[in-house]
Image 1 (cartoon, rainbow, N blue to C red):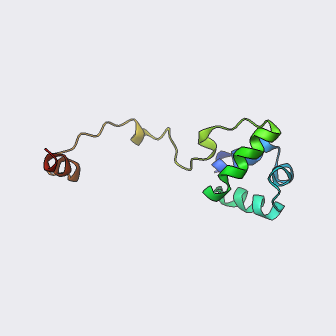
Image 2: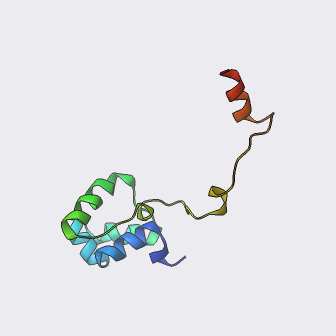
Length: 95
């Protein structure tokens, strides 16, 4: 997966690259590079990223923060619990 296909890569790209993102967030370039390399931004950084996006007029999307592929077919599937499933047992225990 190219680095820009990850949540971190998209976010960094929207800020204009590693150097501009680091400057906007007041973080070392090495931190931003680590995000890009791993494709992951720890949630502790989210408030600072959101604040910097407002200050820099960077338009973000919730998918920029979500490492799960929300378009995966599993999310479109309808789950119908079977009689022996945990969900069915929990539901029946509350009746």
